[in-house]
Amino acid sequence: MTDEYKSAIKRINKASTEDELLRVEKSLARLYGNGVFSESEYRKLDALLLAKWMRD
Image 1 (cartoon, rainbow, N blue to C red):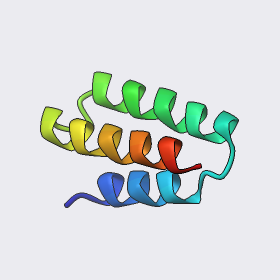
Image 2 (image 1 turned 60 degrees about the horizontal axis):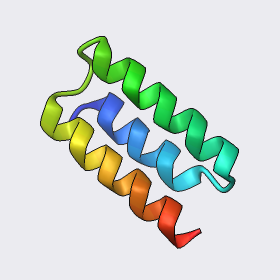
Image 3 (image 1 turned 135 degrees about the vertical axis):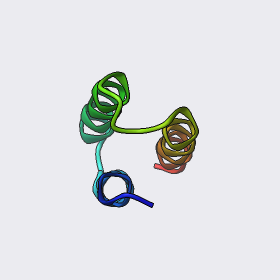
Image 4 (image 1 turned 135 degrees about the horizontal axis):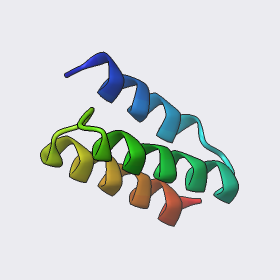
């Protein structure tokens, strides 16, 4: 697990508003587009983000 991946998990968990979740989502997409995350990592982060969104 890379530092970037761990940081993304922390950012998702820290987000408490819809606006913050949207910013994290955009950031994850940019990072994936730049090759920071593998497809597998991106899918896991996206699932975590969606679960957080549904909870809140």
